[in-house]
Image (cartoon, rainbow over the protein chains, first blue to last red):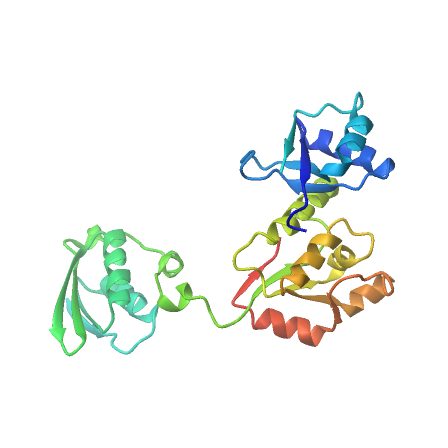
Length: 74
Length: 208
């Protein structure tokens, strides 16, 4: 579990994050809504986390539908 | 007018409260105490009330504090409740013997907007995993039991908390009310006896 590699998608707003979450849910891509990790940002923000192996699937699902600001490896 | 208050042997916050009452009624007050916390609390009272403060060690564990008001009008009104809140009572600072309990009484965090509240509770529960120390017990009641159900977005976080040794109590009445009987996927179905006892025995109770 500790060795699991994750990618987080950071969005410009909470509503963008929720929209993206909805898309991932519809596409059946496992994901998790988590607070933006402290080392990335201190704002009271949320982001979407997927396991590294789902990065491509998540990217193509979101591509053109919701713009993310940043994609960060955890 | 001068008076002496013997506050030796009294537990915090009694000494500072007695001192406050005495200085409100007298221009000079001698307070006898037997511990440095009482001295510190009374020193803060003196600062707030803008009166003179001095302390002398009288030996035998007795500390003599002298409070003086220069003029009657010098005394600033000080709110007792505010004093008690700021006290450095040892008993208030020590981590009590009771457990650290988190109460999830709703499946949202805060009131105002449930969509936002949903995001917040997910964030909150995920963040619980990073707390040090972890809660000893998490209690779910009312709509909070939905968080422990199969389709809950925080199920994996709650499961990880259990793995880390956190006890999760799920209100049986609530599970029944929401007909989630077969769906509860984490924690123990519990009753109001355990819930009330755990809450009453907590040293810290956190409710998001």
